[in-house]
Image: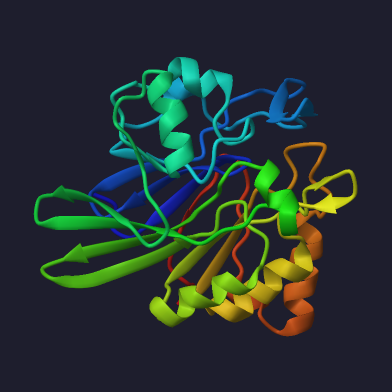
Length: 266
């Protein structure tokens, strides 16, 4: 069991989370540099980086948290290499496709619905949160996306709370999150300023800092920012914007292959 919650960054939005006695994998993307991820509607993007780990190097997992079914979040390597019995908590539309592929333990959660894991007196509660991948009607052409709230409960009380944004833009429906879930300990924030045909599809530096100010986590860890050609807003822009707004102390950057605690520095 991890002494404190921690995250290992593999690349893109792929992380290993150790929270209490549980180990989760997020958005498994194991393509290598130069390989192309399929984004749907005939669109591809080439990967610029290598993942820090292979599937064979992963620890024993309790579940996968999949924000949406896009080729840079669940790729052909993951489809081929992950254990088909592993629970995958995702959107209802992704569940249907994953089950057709043989992942029989995939569970699609409508927004605000919950999946729980239990072990040795601990509960890890995963709640599907609102997300919107594209602006306006364009969102209907993109896969459904969810954020996830991860609550660790021990002895009847909550010990840790993590918000994983998923590939969402900062939209009005996200204001419900801090209303329902105050006191968020940490946030994994998907950035990158993804653009296709000049249309923004994931948060850039400005939107990312807007969301940090809305959610008010004790710690924000940026991921999903430089791995593909369609990512246009580098990590440095987010850090600079956070510094300009006076919130940079809440930000902890992480390199691929690095493991950091999900608790703010002393």
